Image (cartoon, rainbow, N blue to C red; front, top):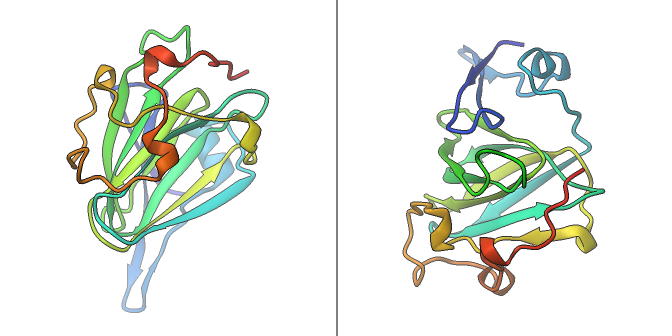
Length: 187
């Protein structure tokens, strides 16, 4: 597998670009290979894959995370459309606690974002009819699911949508701010 690994503001979060082999028929791309990921310093195995469809631009999903014993790392990619994808460091002992990485992922750019355990994750769609696939390192456990308010001013995220224009679930609108989080156990 040929994989370009790019740095982000937080070294444990990686922007990845798999190679596309193009010919007159279209393309083939190996988007995940465990050995290639391990060689790139991403030593994890994925056990679940989710597919998200958002009808409208300005749809915000997140910021979500799970705590131990089912904390999740994620590999996120867009197969149609574009998103601003965001990962917020919630690891209590991390020097980048409370900081975030925000990158545009798109079907056209064919890029992916690896987000390790200990981060909240969310995205905002930049185009209508956007589809996102994400692999997870652990299964969904609703009793361990937590969240962080997407537009908490303490995070300083430059979202591409105004709060009154954002399309969110009622649950995501009611998530706590960073200072209100109490359960940050990931191992």
